[in-house]
Length: 118
Image 1: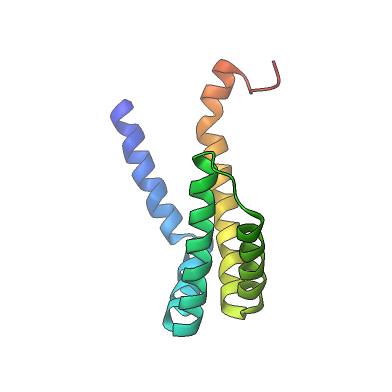
Image 2: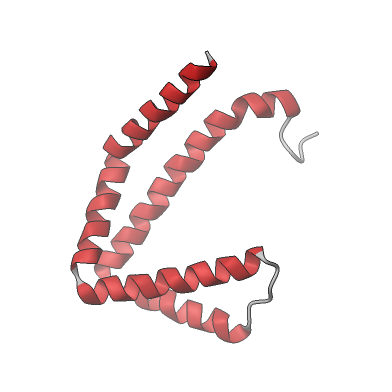
């Protein structure tokens, strides 16, 4: 059965790629990338996001200036219709992945219990 788990995982990958959520996400991503100004704005947003996440993971303090810059960038990208739709689609896809993760982790939860509920 253990070899079969990988087959199921690859089948799940195929299902994700053919899902409405992923198809819409890819379409919106392609739309943003086809517009040079939107692509530049989105790449800038992603770079700021990644930099702040890296600092956070390394335990570094994020300055008030960085927070302010991030907030301004978020407000700016949310005003762009294509980027805003892309971000909404990303959030929907993220929820699907989170739901799938809960299902996959269920055997370990059953075995060890849910943290904080013991």
